[in-house]
Length: 191
Image (cartoon, rainbow, N blue to C red; front, side, top):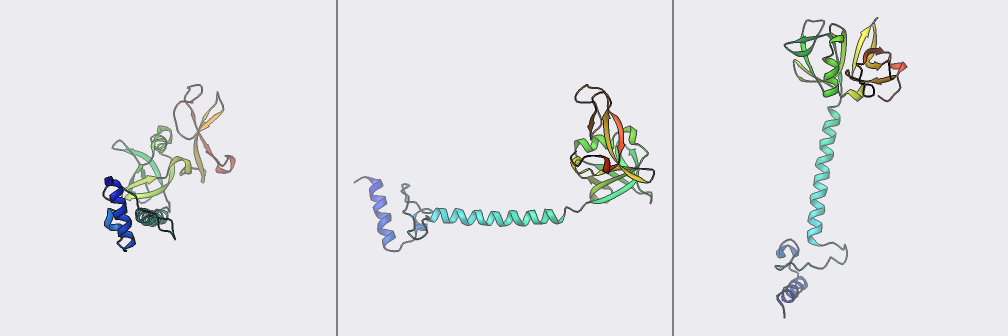
């Protein structure tokens, strides 16, 4: 009789006597012989442990997503856009200086020299009392007030007729794009 046969036979004998599968290294015998599945559920002890761990992970993931969703409220900050110590900032009506940060395309917009001194509004969250993180560019979180109305900041290539959301060269003709402040009603829903 080989060792594997003996180990499997020992496992079977232990199972018949009511010895738990946990005594056999998480549902396996010493040489790796897998136990038979439970006839009522069709699962082994190892699969039950795995399923319990996965359920626990899913619960924690759901709780984490709930916490993130609760923090998703954006607020707006409005003031004069300026550059202070090499960083983009807004000076509010109360003369408070708030430094701005954001993703790469948003950073390109707030560093655009053509927008300096404008009545600027950004939506996002405070990361510190004097630091504000602007929502990603696809949420259209940046606007400039002109004639008392909010205008979306866009960039237009006259040659190709292509609109973009960040300053720089046109991806088609490689010419510099022009600043084009637009009413939100005149633009399509997708950026």
